[in-house]
Image (tube, rainbow, N blue to C red; front, side, top):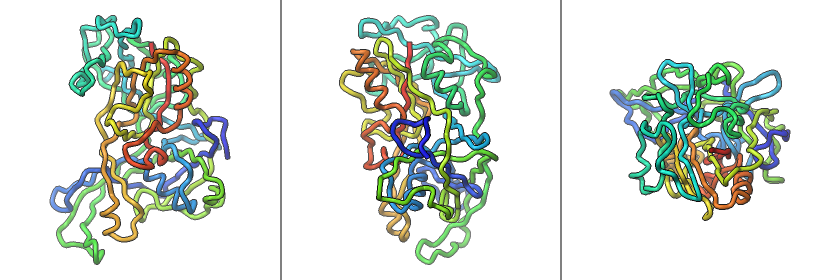
Length: 378
């Protein structure tokens, strides 16, 4: 089912609806024993890619997601992590947008704007990019934390179009439907296993968490089919493994509405890059950019430890194929400046809703990592 809210190319939206909880490890190792903790996270893009490839009998051309989506009747609306330049004071209902640097004649006005004397903590200058300018808190705001939770696609569209809240200005959270994560963490106790005999090892206990989606929520993935290479989603009737070898989920084509469209143009060549899914790029936290684009500033969250592995044939194969990488978290933003506004518009429209590549590891961009959305800043 192709939708009008298409993230960039023709394809279908698919919902992945878990039967029970999901348990997806992050990339950090742990020891099964006294005090061992297995950290559980929301499913990675590779989690969805592996499940869909197995269900369809072959790899699709590309995947984007997963995004959490809420059902209203027969339609699903995607939700996204709040952009990291939106901040709020502790226990406050108001949200501010960090002040952006002033760019004049292709350079940065380092005098800044209103509220420049109050800086957010940043290590941009020490990261090998000394020309980057940190964003600043608005005048009168001495302490603020990044806004948590998720925002619906319509709100993110307003943010990308520059109509939600101006830099340095305030808006009430009550006006735009932010929600906390629609998942409940359930603590479980596990036991260590002998990888060869698949038997329990005595005394090796560990604690982990399973995640349960609330009612009327599911994971949504945009799938670009590879014609003739796999069966249609409509023909997948059986459940698929998702979020654990014994965990099952149902796949179904979905009508997804509310995907945020990009702005029509980008005045003065200014492009805001919003990271929608975890990104792993060859240059670390810095996205791959065209030669005529300059990175002016960024707000990047703490890196995520991502673990992946090939489908399990045996434990030794799993051990050989597993990989760990540090990913830029969703919600991170980058402020770009192009020399030519027309080039900015062309590039921004060509990247919106797609994986920004190349990825640091082969095929990670086609597996859902590094999806970006583009907007304006001023």
